[in-house]
Amino acid sequence: MFEELLKACKRLEKCQTSSCEIPEDILRQVPDGATLQDLKSFLSGDRDELGSITGLWVAYATITKIGRDIQDDESGDKNELLTALIEIADRISSIILPLCSGASLDEDTTDYEVLQRKGELGLRTISQLTKAPLRAPLQLQRSTLLRLTAFTDAADPWGTAESSALARNLLEAQLLQTLGESQTRSFIVEEILTGFLRPLFSKSRPAAITASGRKAEYVEPSRYESIDRETPETKPWKYTHRYAVTVFAWAVRYSDAPLLQSHWPLFTPVLLTLLDEPQHTGLKVRALGIFRVFWARCPAGLMQNTGLAEVFEQAVFPAVLYLPSLTPEDESLQILSAAYPALIEMAGLTYQGAGTEQELEGDSQPKQTTDAQRQLLDKIIREGIMVGYHHAKEHVRLVGLLCETLVCIINGMGILAVKHLKDFIPMITEIMTDPFGTKYPPTLISATKLLQTILRTCWPRIPYYCNEIIRILMLCWLNIEDEESFSDNSSIANDLKAGLTKIADMLTAVMKAAKVDLRERVGPLIEKEPQLSKLFRNTTST
Image (cartoon, rainbow, N blue to C red; front, side, top):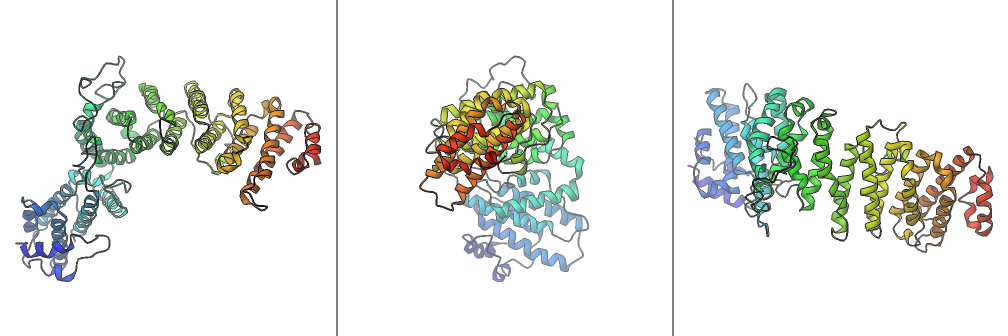
């Protein structure tokens, strides 16, 4: 019945769906007597064209034409129409499902451009179906909704901005108009977590948890340990069914505290499996991002009460040791930028990115944390940041990230951070007095903000380090003055000097509170190096 339309649609196979609408001559090829039942029968057949872009163009053209006819014809059996629309949408969603059939251990030969175009066209067709003039909103099958979630992330290789927007709009309309809160929870628990994800992740579950998702009191090897764990059979979510990670991310994002309170054991095996994945930087970064959303949505104390807080800490913490040279610097930056915020939030603090007002000024009052959270913060500093710094201090971008992370931690710890000053000050000295530090100003700026945070937060102990801080300011200022790449009115140099001047002013105030006149210490330095007069101008004028 659709033979002529198939031939006409073949020329649209290379057409970009985002910039091409169906020409009128193609619509004229849709048989005049075609019905939704005919289209359903066509899509249910076993023709080779059904799984291709051409077959989807046939469906889109037919739906577009029939949609016009439905608007003109108010008669007919609406129940039969509704059933046909639902079944057609389900069939199209199965056709566009992004199975990565070419993914293997050695290479990935999947044609993602085809998957992208099929996704866009199929989602546009389903969107067209939902616009049919019905008395009640079209309620798609749960299997259809599950497949739609596979396209909600535009960053996926099979995703695009258009397909992501279409999938999100379709899902939100279904959640708000037809499913409701109770059925949405049921959909996430029954369809996604239990029916879809649990079988996919069953063979790669970490030994730290039981099959029911709870903490294992006695860690025993999995019954699949004897099998090669890095195969498409044991990890289908990493190869053929890569979209499972996107589906899980969507489920976590749309889960609320009551759902997590009742069904957290369904989330933990998948989440810990992703966090334990040692390979593929992009997957590890994404897993850490999903974990942050999960942790933020969990009811307070739930993971601690179940004993899983420690399990998650053991799963996340090794990520901060993905350092050069074993890990390329760019990949290390990606992983550490995702891992430290996750650990900081596990420790009860709110992570503030570099440059935010809270990051620069600090909280008015440090967060109240438990003993376990304070121990985690100490561990992050000692076994994470300081180990990372001493191992990879020659990688200046990494050092800048560590400084920015410390700013957030110190703001959250408050005065409790004083016990780490013996490590912080030598680290800052090395960074800010390095003669080549001015070659990469962003790291120097990050270290300057770190020193400002220390003076603001740990000021009672600063007099002990007064001479060292003066030395840091003096050498850093002279290095900036001597840097040939900075012009006379360089904005970067001016920003660096402004940061150093602010530290000098803060140090003056701290020492004044300690009843110490800083002029006696900086005066001889200014006499020897008159350039320093601008650095300590407020100190010498008081």
